[in-house]
Length: 430
Image (tube, rainbow, N blue to C red):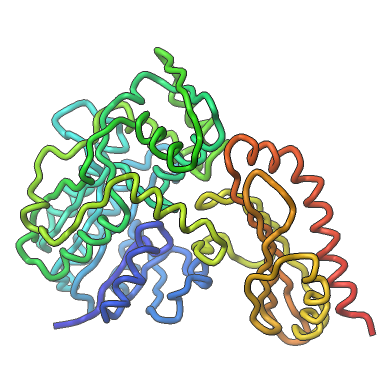
């Protein structure tokens, strides 16, 4: 039997957590992505086979599925905007047919948790219909349905994190009191991994959630408690979905089109009704939301981030996994050792945390701020030129952290930009 596993949606959040755990268990991995270059800075990039493909283009799927025993279907199209629900069903139909033709033995799919008998948002309905479309093929499908996923990098968790950090008084609609059953990201991984060897789950749909049923409002209060914040709510009888999506897109890492789809999904309860997963996979030890939040907070360090933003030749400002990140690059006609000799002379201004000779230096910023900051330099060498990448990481703590970043950071950013140019200039001095 083949030991080769295909992971689709390889640039996404779930795949980024799943692939390292599959590798740890000795599986051979093939990762499918529309833009494989976005994977080049993942820690596991050189340990997997990368293939380019698109589930909306059937001709690209046969090479990806060749020799594969099990395929993880971890794809959604919310970011593609209007009409995404139709594209999701077409993609699932293409994949089911290609998997059947290739002789795949098992598909594992992660969808959304909602009561399909009730009125639910198009996003949630699409997730359920995608699973149904995959099951129309002859390949056995194990479908897991999850609601809020608690973990650093999860779009639902990052939405909770950034809004709760920013706003002492959080405005929102009354349906913030709707029920939800969050599940820790590690428990999602536990189920996805358990399905590989447990054939009892073939052809079944499992609703998965953590040990507690709560409300969206209470989740934000639990996060606030873990961070030492006091938060209050201003619940309004009606807030337009487009307005909430605009605010979320502005203040959190979640893009507006995805925020629009997600906010619609909050308008109904998302709880486990059928608990068959606990019987079929009793080895999964459920983690509560507080513990998952505390684990996510331990990842507030640059070395624990998934560097999903790295691609050459751009200045980047982004929000990611609890951080504000600003990155700049310069190409310098000098060797890395010359550049780092200049950088190390500046290092006494900072608290150096980590260094790799002529390649990487990470320093903790000593200035007092409502949050924590780091400054990192990396060098990438090509013929006759070295690219210096300077990255500022800042994790805000409460409203003061956001105030500092948006109001005061532009001034400090000019100083860091001048610092990068100074390093480049001194590196080419004869």
